[in-house]
Image (cartoon, rainbow, N blue to C red; front, top):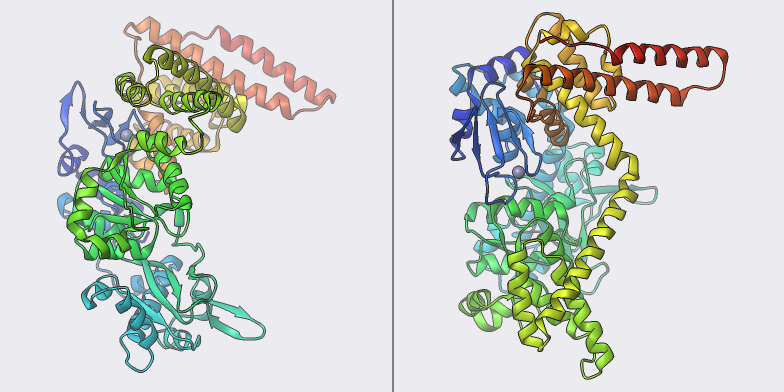
Length: 591
Ligand SMILES: [Zn+2]
């Protein structure tokens, strides 16, 4: 970040969050706020709310929140600087030119250096592929797979020659250091070989982010070497869980659906056949982060996984992940072919489109796949299978949807509908118990219960302070940032208290800018958007504030007590705090 805090604040304060967000969303005025359906999760009733006074947005469905800059970063995938460049003309502010010294600053930015290193390596691989002398094996392979020159160029495919030093010499000439090559996952070092490229004698698939920058590489070995596919390891810029192969093109295609495949070649041949909405996970199973990315753009995902056992298993897992994000998964039947690449070659794009139209509903796919595990001629096994069906149905949260499936499945398998309904009800209860138990186990009972409760109280207090800044004078002798239960909230409280001490109204949109992590931004946003409902009367509010103050302080003292031993000094401190707490119980707040 090379803009000064003052400049950032100036740009931000001169634009209005409502008018900027209106360029992307259709906001409706509702009460004091503006609302619309959340662009970051799939929903039918609006829970995305923009607060014009505080210049922040918050989704009460998925919890995402931030200011105008973080919105552009999230929604348009801009970098911080790009968001600034976008807003500056709207704010009537001229940004300083990126002069040489700033270039120098950028050069020292490690991430940018890794992107650079990857760009040069990708260039090298691309050039080698088209080189008649060295690129032969790679080009021959790609041609045999039926790719046109145009497709090869579109995906910037390349070839890593058998000489593993070539790319290293090339990158060095472009000013990439050895360490950067190692950090970018292009090269490795060994005592025996010195610095060597990890990819050799492989066709190279550059993996790009949604803006087309190269994050890493996938390499397909020529011949029968192992491993068949080699991927760059994760680096500072390459997170496999958060990226999808082909997504940069699929996003730009603006179709209201995605085709999810297993491999690079599947994506490429689908794109070549006109299905530019195809994407694939990156040599790992499909992840929830990837589901979240897809869900932002479309609720329709078609799976074209391999039709073998492993592919079916992977599809079953992907369906469940997609369902958690309320994405409708449909399964494309590719029989008699194994994968979309073979299918397109065998039956063509038109037939593939037809198969998409007739794609199987994900729940029915799960049921039909599971059926194969049971011998339904045997009564005991048949009963087990019916209970399995009930398990699947129990996962559906929407009762109408559940009923429709119940109807369809009971008809198909000749199951008594009422009996199935009963079994689903039981399975749903068991599932709810299991979820509760797992939640308690993974987050610990404290976090699920008390910690959340404390954070809510802390949020409320800060929201109150924002609404009634004069309140601070009455409570400042009792509370400090040290009383807050998490590091993040201690940090936010510190900033809020500082502004209040200086007689300024805290600026939530500015405070959010202090945090780079999107989760932190959303959490900070929650601090300032806690809904204070049902507190219409002034007295009621006053009592609520006193109560919250007491609870926060009590929790804070309890935390202190835990760290203390049994020395006289410790016991005295405990006692003193207990007395203070008794006093605080009687505090009267006047608004
Ligand atoms: Zn949301």
